[in-house]
Length: 425
Image 1: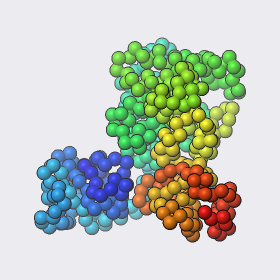
Image 2: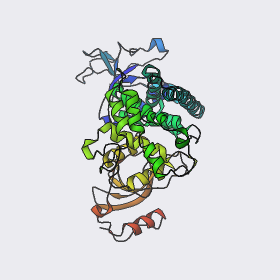
Image 3: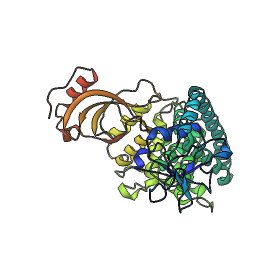
Image 4: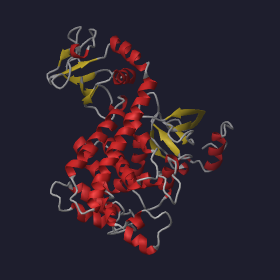
């Protein structure tokens, strides 16, 4: 069935998009569990309410027209050629049966994500090696990679993002390019951009470092610290990349922008131009965030890989380097927040981000304070995720704003389980 929209608040549905093809019983169960009052389907782009072609049976349910009135005991078509209906009990039974194999499906999804990632790396390696040999970059060869990664994010974002954390130090440039592409697409969709725009952002991420093919391999793969002269050569790669791509007629302008400007800084201390603040485009600011995050979380011959939480904490600590508002949105898009940070939750509570138990585990927050009543609560550990069974982080907070003058002491007592902290505002 093709979902055209969800009833009620956009906050209540469990998907990144409001319009997409619903193909799995697990996704049906997500709709059932979300509590949305009804869904809108377009029966010209997918199955109608009888579901005969899919082998699904929809029991009679009170229908809705576009005005919300139920004129009969069965679903009806609205004037917009869409059908509004509440999923019925048979969906619940079918979904429950499908969920019995969730663990097996999870393993299969991770395997499929890893296979897609490895296929994408092979394509990028061919593109980059061709550029090193002076061949024209084949945009038509790169776009299927972006399309496949975009589709994978829309189908199972978590599986693909988890695969990004399992990279090795071998063939870093190629793996890094696929990872930044994935992060760019994920973030573009998180910001509400349509798939065409997200595709351009993904292509920008895929090609952002192609200029490194103009850097001598002995410098690019040097295991130790670079000299000042070698660093100066490395810093020519944005210009090399731009020159490789600028004459390709079908190359989107956003790709050229990100390739040339992904090392600019908000304070103007970046390169190659020294742009600052709003002089740097949204795409280039996002490219910088995705580039740095993946670089920090990647193992290199001269450094260990930071954990995702460590990388985010380090990036958040920098002053003047990155767009902090965009960086927080990036945290939301990947579900990683700096451990120990004070955050506000969607449920009108403040909490402390806890250290993750594993590198790939979802974040947990110790909720302890009601923002409406401005009073302390019994501490509760809540899981942060993008579905309604979990909570969500909506902002990073300054402890001083909430009059937590002895914040370090409060946080330590809470995390250690020492009971209600003293010094309440």
